[in-house]
Image 1: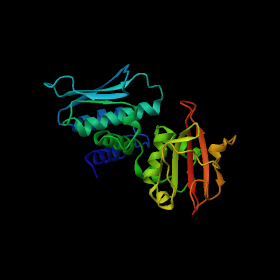
Image 2: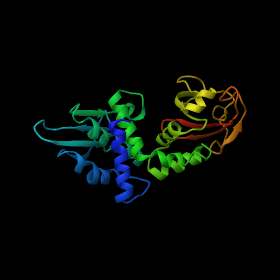
Image 3: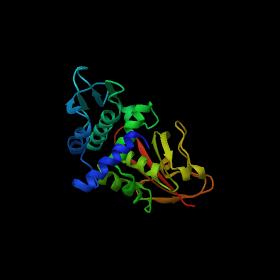
Image 4: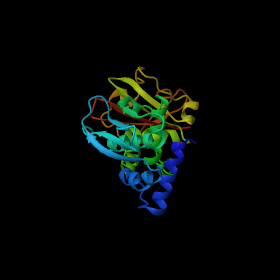
Length: 258
């Protein structure tokens, strides 16, 4: 367990035992009431500004002072995205402020959990803090589909994308998720158990031609059963999908039977 995950667990424990105890953690409150008081005299403030090439940053304005700034791009209007960006930068403050004096985090750093190690650690911290594993695992007895992922996202104030990836990473079931556009996979992920059954997504591959997403079925949001060989060679699956309305992306949720 990394230092950042240990710190996320500490914040969650204190939030539940001494704080509001709500499933959703207010990052601003946690930063001021839990993180800063235990940072050995280092302080950090949050500012909002217009940034052209990144969504968030964490930096030390003066090497002679023990004060840091976290910046969140004012152009981010989607609240779940702002929450994750802020939590990501708090992760840099908690775990990385002695390693580097400036972090500038663009969309790729905040969307990919396999990027440069320090960015990946900050993403893991944000996901763990915003979506505690015990609460996410409580969803695992439900169908993995648009409706349940939306409820998970709403409960924790995160995006459907973040909720889907977090659920998959923690799940013991055979589930997977992909983003596509114009009939081609952009990226995706399968749970460990689903991958062992043969479910995987490869960027730039065409969507399975018999999938509901590729066929552009009118109502994609309700999970419907598709036969074996569509998403996985030997297993049928429940498939549902959601058109984001931004960037023409489609999110597809796959729940294997078997």
